[in-house]
Image 1 (tube, each protein chain N blue to C red):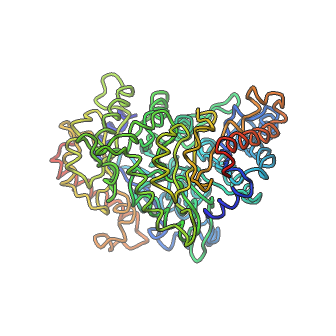
Image 2 (tube, rainbow over the protein chains, first blue to last red):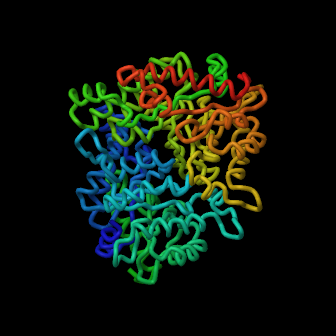
Image 3 (spheres, helix red, strand yellow):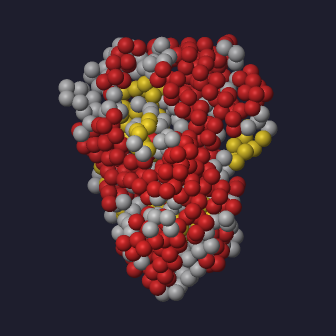
Length: 311
Length: 311
């Protein structure tokens, strides 16, 4: 799966992933009104609004980017109707040729992680049948429970040719509280990174420069990224935190390898709610999707300039 | 909410929670056959089998225990129909007067954790309405992202009088890989525990011996539990790992406070799949729920003997 992602990044000339993290405050009023008129102010109404909003954005950007990253929490908060919109979004993106990174941050003891891995990457056995469930291409994984919580995901990657991104150093302000603690002079995130390399070794196709096991390192910590990049040469880095969370394009340089590859940068509200930002306010809310398209083009230029046409 | 839990533990004289973690291999064939005859070998069929199986167990044990702990992964692997069975299970348990601990182990950056906290503990705003979604009483939370990933859950606890159990030291074999790493001679799980005390201070009702912010410490690590018990006197400890994972009743003593309270011990397959164990095979699969009832009675006796009638 990582080869497919690299191929699509090279084709689009854009190491960019659009975070489909819909919040009600992002959704233009004409979409909300229509959905509430049809379904009432219910979970179904909100879920329909999310789906229509997403569809508009996907239609406007699918030819520009290699991948999307729906954050499942934003759908889970609308219950089963919300999760139906998650599933429709995953399926629609795949139909459009996009790679889907499910931002699920699951992780548990072995047997439970297996259930999550089955739900999101694999196939569940029911009687004599095998059925795909959410069926994303990649998911994010929380490593706090250790190897036996991560290995079921790795096994599913091998079986189904899928991929994962393991949280190493997250983009949020208090990520250092535990992740930066020094163990014999080595920060915990580096100890996690070393395990990621180990997990990744089992999941690298012969001849591939990259492993199906990647990692997450926030755009807000470029100094740490430099050391981690060297430590994990075969790991693709999923980089959240660009834009709204404070990471700039210049910060992104150390996340990339010398081959110009090795990182994919996420932007969520900076793209999907672009029309609410000063720079794109001329679009207005009815043309929200065009604003998103322009924001993708601008982000691409910003990043390509910063990494010096490495792509 | 923690006072309610303590009250129900005292009333039932049983510091026990039953883990409703259904796996297809646990479900008696007559239930599977009926569900597949009605819905085919589909996600709907599997989800219906899970729901009927759960209902049988809940009806057989609800008068013996204070709480249940459904593990959401076991439902998520059956997609939307599975999650509908999760929701039906939560609602049915609450109707029966049981406290529901959603074992969800969510945790993310602030805005995303807020969405999870809303989904599982709070109410989501839709237009002019506020709607409850999964509406468990407690949930488990992964602390790897630090305070800003946990605080949205704490805030929801305060707003809705609900509770959380934060992962401190999990029961699985490789939990030590990161959780036991020594930071200036102090294991990481203890650093997490100190933050749990801090988070818990904001969430303790005046006059209550216990906070709405509790923690998870596996039954498989009794030596660590002793120190952690002292460090977190106001935290209720949710203890997984008794039975199938290797924890014995004797191991449980250090998890309790001198008031005989402070811990609640989970058993999942040891109860819900009791009929498959040698000790309960006389029940056979048609009487699986009676086997579960007997297993609860035996577990209660085992634990009460070990903690010396402290309850």
